[in-house]
Length: 362
Image (cartoon, rainbow, N blue to C red):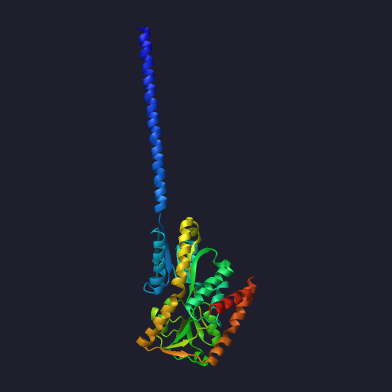
């Protein structure tokens, strides 16, 4: 009986031990399966992760800067990323004011911003070189190429606190006025809307500059607060200034505005390498195919519309008169070099870089 009892206890112990080991094996297998499932799930989430950005700018919702530039760029980024990059645009200063856009992007109030450097004069001293009067820009494509290539060469510190996607320029700007302007004498005392460096240019020419962003210019002209505007031809239609001005004077040596499309640095640094590469590839292609010449198509269409629909009268300066105007604004270039030197930059090299590129792309 004792032997049988001991045998029974031994068998029971073996059975219990076997069941325990079996349960442990099952639990271990289950744990491994769960770990693999989690790893697979994490991998799938990474591959499908989307990246959403807000974009602020001041152009109206119907302006080509929104419909062709912003929406076109957003669409190409979406397609190139398989739908993982999503950009929501806030046009018409609904998210940030024109002159607060760059600082707003730096602060993270918007992920991406589109605006003009000249709206915050003094904030981008080196980049004023691309807007100096006395340098002839034939069209926006040429002006954009000069600005973007020049920024790559100069690498100014003033734009290193964001990630520049690309820049683009309007190219030549003209005078739109309520009275005819064909000589310097005609311009004397006229109140002309201006922004940035254009204010100094107009002062030297004898006009009275009135600083204000483009969205405010229409009403100012309509109410007689100013007598005209210095801007690219596209504003005649895009901002409907042909409705409140009657005369256009061609001045391709007075004006060039450079716009930026830039991203918050932390947002950029937080992107995986593959997404950064998508941006870089799309940016390069989109700049060349769309952004660089955006204002050319607008200018041509706007001028035809203004002449046909509103009777806008166009004046070309004579060769001698043109030379008078260019000679009059030369001190601004000299002043630029002096200011750059005082700030610790080499003003001569900066100015020569711009002039050389302008000649190359002429």
